[in-house]
Image (cartoon, rainbow, N blue to C red; front, side, top):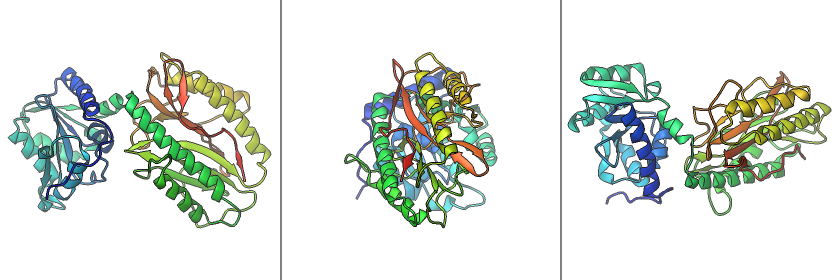
Length: 389
């Protein structure tokens, strides 16, 4: 019995719109066929979210065809049929004999398809930054008549400006994020193991909010005293104590889309240092959001934050944020003072104001937002406070 199509995160017209934007960029670069192998780009163009990208696979987009073709490992083909919006005949599974084979692999299957479909001459786009050097060499050797064009990050730049449908999904992800943060406030107590609190938060991120379950797990960080100066640690084999500070960063996930949030918790009265940093950071956050408008730049937003924070006696070494959407971040625009990317409506960012000040002290707060015609819309509905427990 054939694999049935699953519920689609977006209508067919939305995926065709995205493909049209990619094809327009292909035409501009004189590319006849494009190989997309970055997982987030494949999700964007097809709806596929399965974790199969650890072996060779590619979404093949041709200017001559309305729908793309996906070449993947045979055992992953049913998942692609189930999740991808296009006809199941355009999902091709290559045999298991190509897995862990020292001589041939899935890229050979991809190249075979390109030969069969007459796509090995002229301009061929590849995401070279996502390919191993030996894979690129195989394409060049087996497709000598092709002119290879690097398409790295091109789809990501198209993804930067969201449709209204995508914004709706990011709002759903944000509601889940908020629910997870409120659950953290409920369960973090002196004597509770960090692992048990993490389990409660993660279960909320999976159960979801407003009848919408989380569809995946993403970035999840829980950095508690004495590790509050660390930005990228998960939970530890430890318990919370009176006087502990807990820095949290995570997101709910809907169909691959995230909406990140950071908040700081204090078990007991916050220290004077924490209170002062918090006041400065919130002032900077509000200044940064006030700087958001179409025509402004990422640099304008970062500069507004940095200038305000400096007035409160602090500085932040790391960037102020980054584009966000599918997965945790989009590798395009950054909220930093040397990024002159111009803001447009429906661009979305994680205004990430974590500040790791000393080896034994750090603080976090953030907001995910979209650029609107008149300013910034933040997705979270939670207050910008230190949550005291």
